[in-house]
Amino acid sequence: MRLIERTLQLVILILTIIVGLLIIGSIPDDLSFKEQKKIPKPKSQPIVIEESLPPSSFSQIISRLSLVPFLKSDVLPVAIVIENHEGARPHQRGLEDALMIQEHMVEGFISRFVAIYNNKNIPEIVGPVRSLRPYFIDAIAPLTGIFLHAGGSPEALDKVASDSDLYSINGLYHDDKNNGGEYFRINGIPAPHDLFTGIKSITPLLPEDIDEVKWPPYKTGNVQSGSGAKAIKVNFFNPLHNVSYAYQWGTKTYKRTNGGVISSAEPSNVLILEMPIKGAGEFGRLDIDMVGRGKIQLFRSGKMIEGLWHKEALGSFFTFEDLNGEELNFARGQVWMMFVPSLGRVSFEG
Image (cartoon, one colour):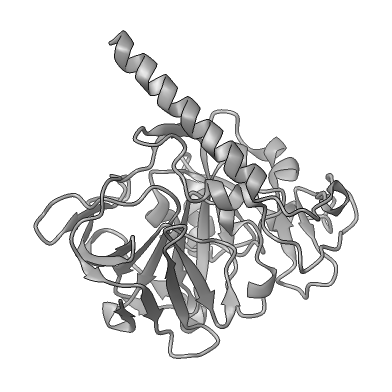
């Protein structure tokens, strides 16, 4: 037992040194501390962010790694709803730091993100923050009950108000126009795409008793047999919203392009779930049931593996199997989950 413990400690030390070298080697020569932008403190005035501000090299590296390889780690997860309207897309911040991103259909059949962060690694600036939907909550459970959002549908707001296990921080009541500052608006970005939050401003509102979960909530391991898939397309029937992924051999990640905008997030896994839309209600809000089972396509390591998703109840997370009933192996690093009405929207070549 002592030999195993020493071996694990040595491996973790070596990996820590490697990550440190990667971080040092990836810092541009012309980067100066003067270029770093600070978020405002509560009750401060709006700030302006340079549109050319790149995601941190540290964030890009961490998003490709699990917290400790071959071991599950304890994390304190927080979910943030992030807008993906074409007007908001160029201003998106913080996606590269998420452990997992879920992409859901909303009214107008465009998409919106729910990004899950370890509460200690929420970015300094993340957003634009947008409104909540009830099936966002259903899809995340039980990984976290803490949701940062700006408004929501009546059903979503009723859901968080009536369930004591859910903790909602509604940015419409905490922005810098309402004597708040935990959420802040950025000059130069048109409303309603201008609302952001960040770790320094939001941490005072987070509950102290966040439940730890073991991460990742899925199995990691070697890639299973599948079809070659280095290029992926997801059809939203509109060039402003169509999505493509390109596999990058050097980093074993996927470059995501959405309506011509390249994402700062480069996931190691792209998981596409077939999730039928039951109907549409007032103002076109969608009715989507997250409990049940359906088809999936997992893209990782330049391959596509077919399988099935299962979610037995709202209080349980998804399980994923290949067509032989074996648990799917994910790559270590970020997972991007897309929920689409039909896998017929997805094409790939490899």
